[in-house]
Length: 410
Image 1: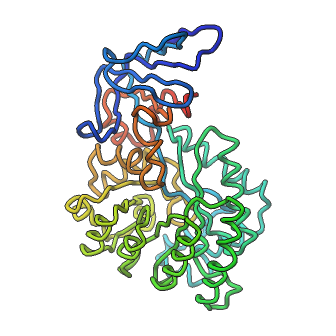
Image 2 (image 1 turned 90 degrees about the horizontal axis):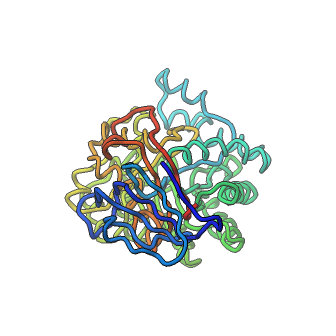
Image 3 (image 1 turned 90 degrees about the vertical axis):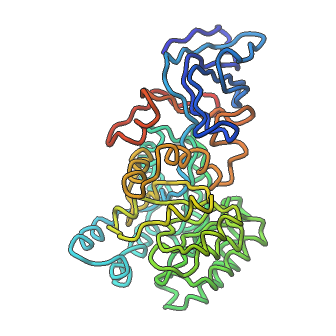
């Protein structure tokens, strides 16, 4: 790629001689433009479309010749648990010997083992452990991501996790959305009293963290080994009182009607969904809630029940996909590999996979007004690829074709 620019570093930059996948809703499929250009002023896109229709901005501009490469929106990883201490390699070994997810959790492994590691780590230690995971995502073109808490299960550690997530967003050129997942598991000091712990989440933890500006959204784990729909509803009601959007780990291991619960609260997303039924899927469609499928966890847990992709298509529910990067059930830091997994395991199409890590993932985070597509007014978050066709982004395994990554025009 060649570039020519004025000495005064103009704020207007033009990427030309490119093939675009704009993901704009006004264009068919993924919005392919064969001979395209992207014009950027500062951190915003002025124009993305056919090169021969591109405006000619007055004044100095930097011209970047893409030499026929593909440009997509920067990738969005809309479901991660990126900040945590330690590993769960022993859980993995136990699972290889036949232990189930539930058995590991009930034996004191699972989420609670990560809670112990995370509580004992200093903020700097958590930052140092989490940074390589973030860098791996950035290296594959990720420009926005979500980071959940949920491995603290007390106010001090949840605050620490969310603060580290914010710090990651300050110290790397990436947009970080933070999600409070206090209702992830029951801490050992709760002595089995789930309702009392939910009281703490609702009346102490969530209000304090929201006041401190550490929370963009609120999540919960609705499952037999976690929390009931009624308990989750209490958390969501508290979030809504504070003006926060919600999302849900729903119907991963059983059908507790979690997807329908998420829809009843007009959640940003319902995630996992392996056991969701048609009634719940229809509710997601009516609510405008995004379905987030997580092939890394499905693969890692060797699950057999596929998410209901055909039902999601039939009811026109937007489908996003993500890494679910976490220590216990999806230690995955490659969104490119997640796309391949979603195609091979769940039979998503190439277009669905690419939309799922750009436009629909942005919708799942509530940032679609300014991210996720190549359109005028959106942030200039671009991924430039050394591929001959977009299908290569889904088809290749263990190969990173990213040529350049642009975040906020830089």
